[in-house]
Length: 454
Image (cartoon, rainbow, N blue to C red):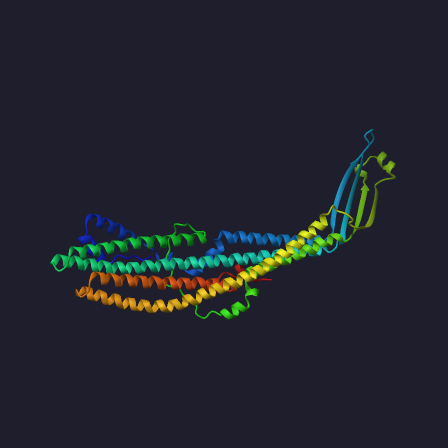
């Protein structure tokens, strides 16, 4: 917020007010002249970069996605053989020298009902779901940052509007005081002008608090010091040419929530296939090697075992057929079927929710754009009315009530237009998020959009 102390306001208040009013004015002026350095300006692109780098929620999402990647990479081990080395020391309780045996074995599961294949498919689907969850969290965070940023802009514009009204109110109070001093005005008119000026000052304080609170919320989204002060843009830009029809047609394929639900459904289907694989036989092959080396055994042990360094290599092929596992497999299959059914329901629910949210945002956007045109015309009329009322009041041709009414109409018109632009921006941002176009539109770093990769 820029320094703002109208000369007429200061001259009148400090020259004609009571000590109590002078004190209030000094506090008011001190708060208005709070310095803001040029390097404290925060642009939307800078806010987005800081959110991507610092936001706590996004950091947790990245960790979850990396954890799913680690699990998927580790799933390759299901296709590899396992190998073990062993050393054993055996002896008789009644006495005698113990026997030391060294061995190694390797086992390879050749077929397990495709449990390893479907298990890996499930890990890949879960990795894709985690990546899409990261993208979804990124889009939600970007939407929050964009809306929070323009909330600050909205509060700034509303504060500027009341500051402009304070200028007019202070001028009116000065004129009322001057008329009273020359005998052309009344004490009632002078007191009413002071009352209206105090009311505007109170509104200024409320809107100052609203601006500061909006900045605190934005700082929180950016993981910055909540008390950090900064300046923002002066306007809320809008895009009147959004490809809404194309976005709506491609919504099921572009929406991150729908893609995430489908990935979860795919993981459930792979889990069902893996559970069914437990009914199939398991075929495995293995090699075993064992030896009793001279260095670890006495001569009596070697003689008893048939010579020095007894060793041998064996192989084996094992086929096992599960007959009864205490209902573990049927229970797992039934649970997996429920997971698949729930996944299909969640995917359909996500698609329906995305369509509904898009339709609501689309109507909100259309209504806000229409309202912007209406309120722009209303503001032009209100400005002309305020200028005419102020000119008539200076000439003594209008009443204070007419002057105040024109002021209030102007302030209300400015507030409605600012609110309409912010409402349109919120709807525009929501439409971009739902259509999967927010990351590119917001200019987020490329690595932040990892969820778009297959």
